[in-house]
Image (cartoon, rainbow, N blue to C red; front, side, top):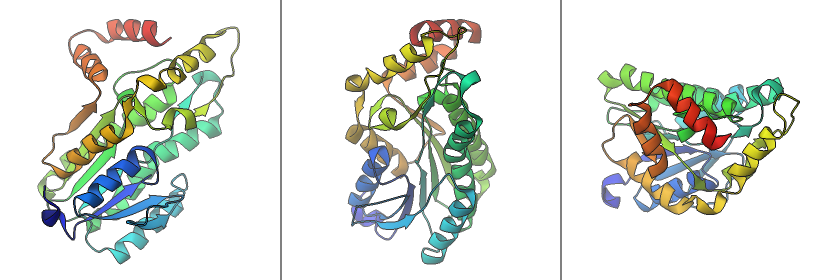
Length: 264
């Protein structure tokens, strides 16, 4: 799409201050969008900034209301903000689990619901999920569950809004070199049931950082998805596309055994 074609269109991006979110925001700016960043901080002078702690439902709703008052028409919503967590499901503190669910599931739900009245026919809502939503992974179970819930929310909204002419798109990125892995909540608690498995699974993820896709490349791919006619699901990363393809052919039991062997 040309810059002229997008001139005057408003895009709201959560978590647009760093990582994939920042790359998406910059690409949208280059393509003529007026961008609105929703995060705890923002140093990008080319975007409008609304400070918000997305783990706080009440604050999230108030921020959405303030954005609508300033921008009565919002053409694109990108729910990008997310938080990772790793650890044995049995031993993760409940407050950590609820915190991740607030950021990864409830914030996109509340934010989208609050902004929907400003989205016109032809508008688009993009949920930045994760390849972890497509398969269960050992010791990343809570994160996988939160993102799987986000996928179902996105698919359901796509159906509900189909007659309104609003597209809802789910994007599941795989391994991206963005600092996300480093910033996730890491819980290494273990017991005789798990032994060294919790720590070794986390170390396996941490040591793969140099093999991940460049964040600029990933952000560019997602920005293009945001701006073009879109299908329901996009997966970023050849390995995860292959796993997803296999999941449609082989039994769930077989996939669990294979994935457990690779990641556990």
